[in-house]
Length: 106
Image (cartoon, rainbow, N blue to C red; front, side):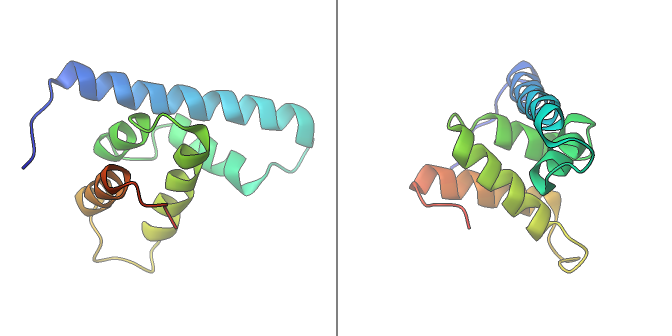
């Protein structure tokens, strides 16, 4: 059973995910010098809109920072070219189900 949320809610969560990623990227660049971490690269892609809006809004619903970054890591691993049959909708649905079930993201 899924419920449709207003577009404003979707936009709010997508923007929240981008804001978190932007803040992380700025902080990591201060401390790490020239070579940013893999997570900072992910943060850049999230902040720049390289993640589809439906996946961004799923990420934005995750309150816990640790879980948020695990989900980002998982998304980029799962969305890699090694998984061409996985759609962005399937990824967003997987993140939603795992969060609702209280399961840890891989």
